[in-house]
Image (cartoon, rainbow, N blue to C red):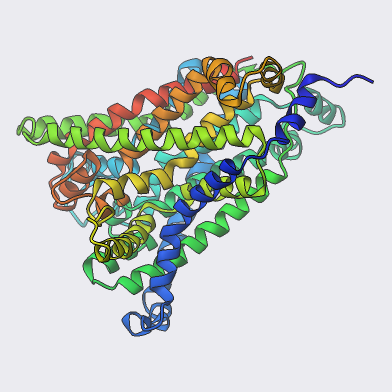
Length: 550
């Protein structure tokens, strides 16, 4: 009996358990856990009961926040499922005019943050906007004599969040549908099932875990959103936490609300992991399912349906922002250079911090390590599910304690609320998972037998990484760095809470202008966020298209 090198290599690599790896895992775990521990300490420390009683929260604001957040989540789930599953199925299963172009255009709304989309549509859909003006001119009716939906509501916020987040479901659903086995469908048809029954009983069960994972990601982003719900005055948990901390000065109440939101997010993560634990990964079918050519009105109906989400989620908001900026006539704000520089500085610092940590963790996991290493990496990856406003509040509490200790030792403050270091720390905790996932995926595409061969030639692990892995994973590392950079660029609540005084970024100034109803002034920084976000999204869509190409 022969044993392949690929089977032996992981076993050999797992035998290397070094103390530095376990130490690194513990440091990563502590970095993620520290803000949460600080929140728990403030919320339940002795003497904190009178500052914001838990019973008062349960009886007053908590029901309102729970209902509003649940309403928002239901709207988002309905939209991402409708758009993501339908477009993923059409692109994977059929040929129709413009399919190749639409396959990657459908990913572009990922580059448009939901709060930017909300700013863009407000002027267009408002009573004084061009759409309602056109309705009045066409019908002769006046304001109040016709029905028009209220966009400043949970439904409006859910609509824009859904348009921004449906690509999570679309990408995973398209890949799952593209990898379906045609033999299963043919067997079902031979047993007398029609096409609808085959889809529901054969095709959909296979794709359901991937769709559930994409929906969970969209829900986590919804629970973490602050800019959209704040602008639309939706009483969600994130808006309530920020209002309690900054507006009312109720630190204990904000901490308790943050822990409640974190409990919801933890439950959502558990559900998502349970759905993925039931997924089975197999090699693609030897005979991929062919795409069926659509003819006549069915083909154009598919084209129009797949064109609608990128039109509403990317092209129209970009045009509305450009129109608002040009109509304002104010030109370019002289502070724009500072905003761009601050944004680039924070995003670059976040990427430069996350990537080395993620590379260390991913390579240590490849070498094996022990339980502490894997537990630390798991906890570090959970930071992505922690909303930015929760991280911000937790870090403000933590920084106050750390800086008081340093002051007692005669040392300067280093984590004071309102410091670049605090913002970068929040970015590192929140987006560690983004960098780790990209690097770990690149390492897993390299055969373990290459490690074993290099080690048999006397190369140390660091030399194997430099001479063997690095040339093969540079593209994956670059894409991971780009994605972390863009996530840092779009992060609003953590930046808003932790940034130094008068140290504004594009996301912060767009939010501040929109909050002051200066939508024309918010247009240019919002446009720049969208423009910069295009590069990684196009790269992601091309990679996804190449992986599902038949």
